[in-house]
Picture 1 (cartoon, helix red, strand yellow):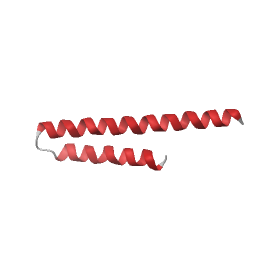
Picture 2 (picture 1 turned 120 degrees about the horizontal axis):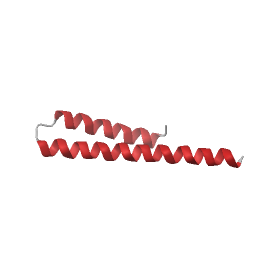
Picture 3 (picture 1 turned 90 degrees about the horizontal axis):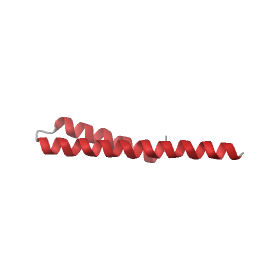
Length: 60
């Protein structure tokens, strides 16, 4: 896992904690949307890195 995907995952975790601590519904919803976006970015990055590694090993 790269530093960037670690960062994305850490941000998602922080958003989840913020959502759990939120007392206002709109704030909780915003945090949950942010969490989902950060997790999606981390997953896409990891998938791209996996595909790039597979292509690189196939060329060798």
